[in-house]
Length: 362
Ligand SMILES: *Cc1c(COP(=O)(O)O)cnc(C)c1O
Image (cartoon, rainbow, N blue to C red; front, side, top):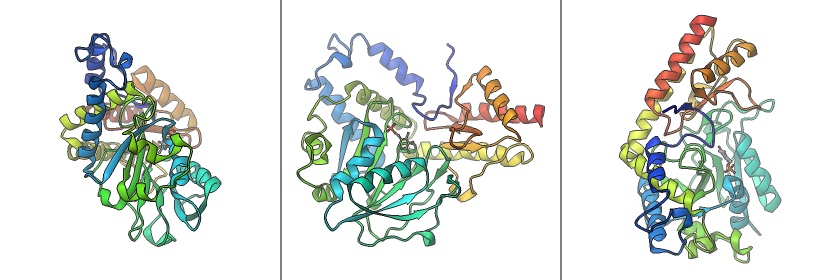
């Protein structure tokens, strides 16, 4: 079998065990004589998958009965609009903290819809290489929410500690680090994530919303854009992306088998130590623009001495079976996107590739 080391930023690698199970079940699933894709979303067999996926997600997130889990479409990008549509309005304002491309997109949509304040930004000459410190933030104690991008996929920064919003619920885009570490969910009002980085395939966005936020949601919205519609119908108002949800369910079972969030957080920390250690251990060859306290444990952004060497590293990496090492076009350089599924063994191999390349080209 020729599976590569898949370091694409997203869609990203899935556990091979999950893919094998799906292959097994593709023709005949759960004794139905058909695949899950061909099954009615109102069937008892699909219903079981749907509700078990919700239950497993809540368990892994440490969320109690005061949280509702939704499976929506339109990606994280539609949440940039749905959050303000549902929560902004007359006499309300929201804070947005700017830490990268995705938080800028979230802000753009919110501005179209209502009153927003930029409560902090680390932009410098068009790039964002750090997370703001608490004392740099200008937070509104009366904001209806404070929007934060927990992990900045493109720049390789991550809120290692979420800001103290003084009780204002944090709304967080966790598309690229959901379930990668323990969270105190009591500080959040909404958490959303496109599935295709850390949860499964593209096509479904998981939205977790707390009851008190649902109560604050506006009425009179277009039906499909109202959180209340999806809460009331358990994400079955219209046909949900059943195959994607079924896959998310399998990835969550896989994660539970890895020791859940505790286990994966430890492994992610070890992976980060290895990669940043390799960068710092070869200071004449590798560098990262990201300040140490802001470094992501998911997306590792680094440079080589020249752009030619970067091209060569990416090409030789590909040759050796390491895919997706090219940095985002807005940053350049190299990026390793090592999500939950990219295990420690694979990271040891990519680090060996880096060291070997540095030794030969330094
Ligand atoms: C990939 C990504 C998105 C975009 O998600 P879509 O599902 O394509 O809309 C948004 N936010 C973050 C942090 C991402 O990494």
